[in-house]
Image (cartoon, rainbow, N blue to C red; front, side, top):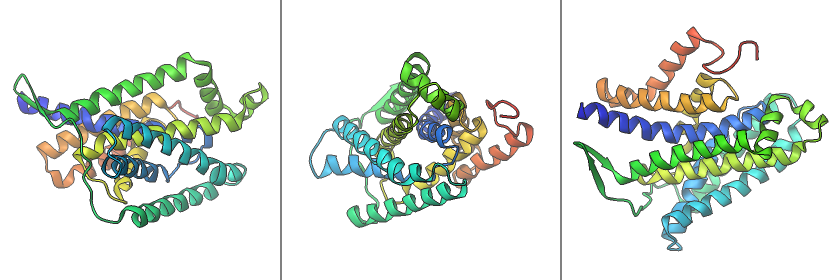
Length: 287
């Protein structure tokens, strides 16, 4: 039972991080209807900004996280204005190619600024918490608490505020939302800003138990795409549930099968679920 609960803890940790990244990705997809391949690079830059703020400037962990969120919000808005907005009337392949270009540009820029070496981000939460025989590093508990608190806050923002309702309306019908007076440009910039902040927070939370390096976002964004396909493209609840599914699948797969195959579990699960429900878990048929 103790080993089982340990894997549940690991699954919640991974699911929380994957869910945050997938939420930002699915919000942007809801506005653009184009997968943003650059989102993994935003995740990577967020980790490097926080790492640099802590190591070079001596900032605290939470201040560095806020700085990373602010920088990534600005970077995401600039990307939307300079790259994606001019292509809003182009065919789907053009924004996809542009997103890949942003990804490559940011990875090359990060390597030029911070180097290609693997870095470890410090954290003030280095203690080990014992709970009923379960050993839980404090950083993992922080990830779980912060990630799910952010998910709840985002859900309340989207469903209980006027600004959040405009994002949902724009995702459902861009032309119709514009006809009733919603500023499409403002909503697009806000959505990208939220997406960038979620990526930066997720990266800063996860980096202390992982490593910081220029290609760190590639595997995470691949799994985020798996998550939003599983949950239904553009579905916020689907992104949250999909993140938990992949997190638990990886955790239990690594424990009961092998750590060598834990990254393959997500893709096997994708094939199985889509063979039973091709539109995803939360998407409506024919949407």
